[in-house]
Amino acid sequence: MKIRTFALAAMALITAPAALAQTCQNDPSQFPAWLDAFRAEARAAGISAGAIAALDGVRFDQGIVNRDRAQGVFAQTFVEFSDRMVNSYRLEQGARLIRDNAALFARIEQEFGVPAPVIVAFWALETDFGANTGDFAVIPSIATLAFDCRRPAEFRPHLLDALRLIERGDLAPAEMIGAWAGELGQTQFQPSDYLAAGVDYDGDGKVNLIRSVPDVLASTANLLRQHGWRAGEPWLEEVRVPASMPWERADVSIQHPVAEWAGWGVTRRDGSALPQSRAPASLVLPMGRNGPAFLAYANFQVYLEWNRSLVYSTTAAYLATRLAGAPRVDPRGPVASLSIDQARQLQTILAGQGFDVGRIDGIIGLQTRAAVRSVQVQYGLPADGYPTADLLARLTGGVVATTLTADEARELQTLLLRQGFDIGAVDGVIGARTRAAIMEMQRRMGIAADGVATAEFLARLRAL
Image 1 (cartoon, helix red, strand yellow):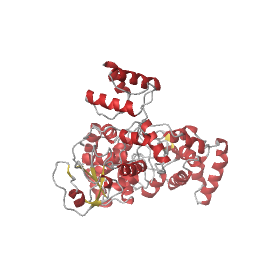
Image 2: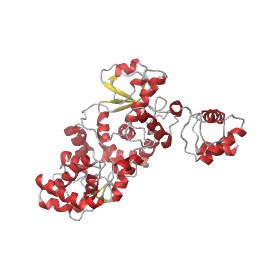
Image 3: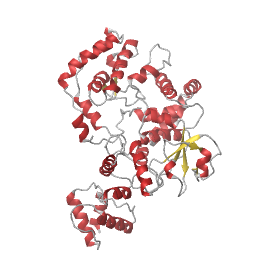
C-alpha cells in the first residue's frame, strides 16, 4: 500500500525529519553506473532495446528527491481538506459528466461493478477531470526515485513497467508526462497500475489514460475492482454518535456488524435507526468523537488501497456520496486540533515510548492514531484516537509546543499577567500554568478552550 501524489497542489508540504536526511544519502555521481546496471536488468527481463532507449539521456534530478523528502500528506484536518476539495465546481462538473456519459458509466458498472460517483470522485480529486495531469517527464522522475535510497524497491518495478508500456505501444516516451512521482493520466496511475489495470475501452488498440476518457474511466473501475471493490455495496455513510460509547472500537481497522453499532447508540445522520444488519462496518472519526462521524463499509478499504491517508480516503469517499446525492457533511465540533509542531512533538514522545508512529512529520496518520488510542486508554480518556492539547500536556508534564516564537510567547505571558493570571516566570515556555491561563482566557472570550498558544489568540490579547 502506498501514498499517491497528485498533479494538483492538494497537499500541505512540511519539512521532513532531519533523521531521514542523515540516514539516507545519495551520491549522484553513481547514477550513470546505476542506470547502466538497470539497463542490463531490463534486458534480462526481456524488454526490447527500443524501449530501453527511453533511458538514454536520463539524468539524476535532485529536485525530484527534494519533493519526495518534503512530501507530507494532508496536514489539514478532514473538515479543512474536504471543504477545499469538495467544492461547488467539482460537484457541478462531476454531476454533469455523469449525466453526459450515462451510457458509458452504465456499461462500466455492468462490467466492473463500480458506480459512476465513485469513479468521478477520483477523477475530480486527482486531476480536476483531466485538466491537471502534471508536467514532469515521467521516465527521469521514476529513474531518480528508483535510484534514490529512500524507496528504491517501490520505484524500480515502476521503471521497468514504464518501459513495458512503451514496448506495448500504449505511449511514446515523449507522451509520458505526468506527476513528479511518476503517475500518469487523468486518475494518476503509476506505470505498474497502468500496465496491470489499464483497459482499452475505446477499441483503438491502445490504453491511453492521458487522452481517452473511456479508457480512463474503465481503467479506474478496473483498478478499484482489483483492489477488492464489491459491486452493489455501500462505501461510506455519515452517522451520528452518542455522547458516550466504547470509543476504542472506533477505528478503520475494527469492524462490527451495523446492528452492533446501532446498539451502541449510533444512528443515521437524520437520527433514524440504523438497520439491524450483520454487514460489517467501521466507525471512522477523522477528527475524533467531536467531529464528523461515518460508518465505513467493506468498500472503504478500497479507498485506503488507493491512498492510505485517512484524510484523503475519507474525502474521496465523501465526495462520491455527495455525487450520489448525500448532503454536505455536518462538521459538528468545534474540534481543537494540534498544530504541526505540536503533532511532531507528540509523535516524538510516542516514538520514545516505543510506539510505531511512522514518520515523525506532524501528520496524524493511521499509525499515530493507533498509538494515541493506546495512550488514551492508559489515561482513562475517551479512546477515539484523535490527539488533543490535553493529551499532549499530560505526556509532556504540561509543556506544549507552540507556533509562537519565544519573544511572542513571552509577550503572551506578559499580557496574561496584566489580566491577573499567575503564569509563573515570563520565560517563553508554555507550561501548565500558562496553559491554564490561556484556557480560562479563551473561555472568557467565548472561543474553544484548548489551551493552545497561537498567533490568533495573541492578537486577541493585544486588542484588549
